[in-house]
Image (cartoon, rainbow, N blue to C red; front, side, top):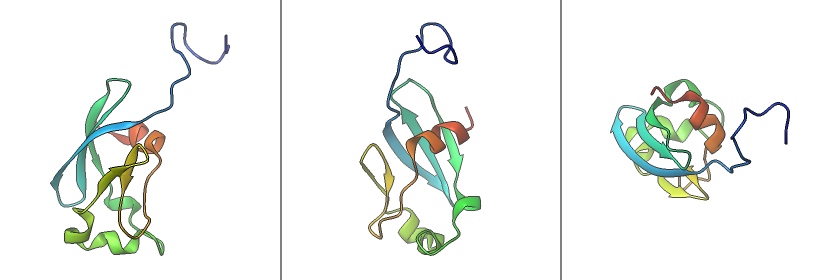
Length: 88
């Protein structure tokens, strides 16, 4: 057993199981561990790959692919990052 992990917690690969656009740069997400909540991704939209997401119509075009949010230009966020930053 991993000493850094709380009792009863098993190794689990984090997956986004549902995603719904809310408004602006906010998305409601649910995860395979049962957590769900809203995340505002506006502070993360910098750098070459994420700049195009500032266009709200492009931002809204996300899909669930590879167990996380992804966009046609190759942008995505690690599901673990999303899970850590949702407002429950």
